[in-house]
Length: 66
Length: 161
Image (cartoon, rainbow over all chains, first blue to last red):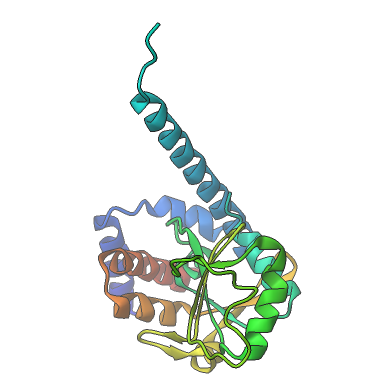
């Protein structure tokens, strides 16, 4: 990759909406640490999904007459 | 809850020979994108299927794309040949592929793969240039987007002395 190609690749990723400071932070880690950080994020995604569907079920459940 | 790290550790413990591909390979290169599964490329032989069964036995693996959600511990049966396996386990989704679009088979991938240590096991990971090629070959919007970030990662890695 030439210097111009490197600049272009970084500019395109930024235009696509990537926050490259997160990439910089990941690059400072070992692959093992990156995998662990990723899995924590995935765990959070799943917990939020489960909380979201529990909320949707509770809010759509028919109310009992008092 | 998924634990993709554990999934790879199990494969390492059972001495399955594979190359990590797909989004999780991107994660190992520093991608910020979160992926739901682990994709690996291997030679899907009866021997590999047996090693995968040993690796995944405690994780209740099933064929997630079959209507009956068949157990991987029982299917495929001996003598039955398969190209790919799309599994769901207690630790997450595992796709086992014999061929990667735009790149090739296990041997082709492995020739250029890099080695990283995960949980004390050495794992082979598709080369960054092959991963970009594969993402672009698939051509879905999300893969093209991922390829843009991977190109930026490649640029940053090249810039680092």
